[in-house]
Length: 318
Image (cartoon, rainbow, N blue to C red; front, side):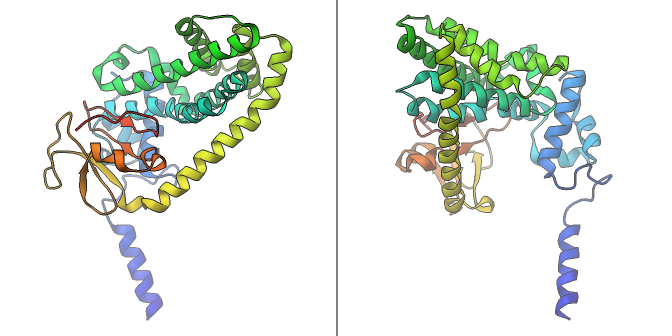
């Protein structure tokens, strides 16, 4: 009897929500990830303007209305995809920069490695859409800000590494732009079909040669950077485990609005709903420990500003 009741409950749980129009192409993937993957493929093939949410939903095998449960629209989907091609590198960069003050060449080499890995892992080479006219719109301001911050880290590390090795005082802005172009050459390599995984170290080494480091300095960085990167990634994983212990996945949500009972969203007034189900102004997050602030994701609805609060970031006022 108990087994029959359990089977009935399992069957009921599977029936919750509308059934798919067709079986999932990847049964192990969450619907949100399926939507992102399908959208990335369509955006890369035919661009943003020619892609509709109905096409994305059809590719996933869900109803168009179901897609809006996860995303406000195709702009929201593209913003998430573009951000995923930058944010992992930026998260590492924030910790990496503070760890490599004694040897910035190692830090620059390590950042180039993780950035290449992020770009290679982007679904359907979505980074090819960086230069689309639509990406210059206000909806994508948060992505452009994160990419600009990542480029700034490249500039600071490049200038510091050149100064330590040769005493040269490089222009930080120009150095940042040039290094970023070298790293993002992986986008065109993927597009042309000539990318190989062993090119990652060649690109990282090219970043060091660009700022004037000799072959000995490049060789030392190639040996030291992986160890530094592993330490940083281990630290970030530890923070993620503490975050998950403090904010269980089911109880942590974010939203925009004026109060706990107000579903209207307006710019400049961001509230965070946490596991306690109590809304609090964003400014009160200043009282949280740094590792917890690093874990808070403030997600936006369409045409709002999305941001990631890092431990060293300034929090916007509500």
